[in-house]
Length: 181
Image (spheres, rainbow, N blue to C red):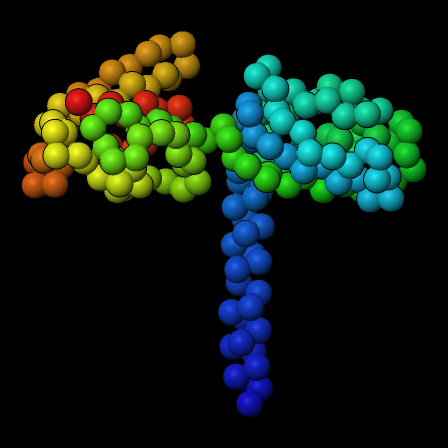
């Protein structure tokens, strides 16, 4: 009986640990929607969008760089800024919408549009997210546009070669635009 209770407890706690590990490794980016909660200070708690310059604005704390930090790092920075005004501030930072992790699919797919890259995905995994190819799609001439730092890259992909194992599947990165002619 004890083993059974321990086994059930393990499977109940495991998802919490996995969620915490994902939250600790997530890198906040521009456009992400965050929930900032300051315990005991309801008028300081709010949802904020990370600006294009990477900063968020909070009452008392002012502008704080959020982009490139994990939620626990940003939490620590906010608490540090608030110590000037609040004795022992405690806050939480929760990523509500990971908007900075978007990619786009356009052209001859059933449902073109923007999608959230909430896990590692490859080209063969994202085409079905857009409903697959239309009957007029040229799967042998897919183009991926990618911005890498200050460089713009263009990849021409033959989807059929990937399916046949003659080419490697391409990992999708935030900001990628996939064009299916």
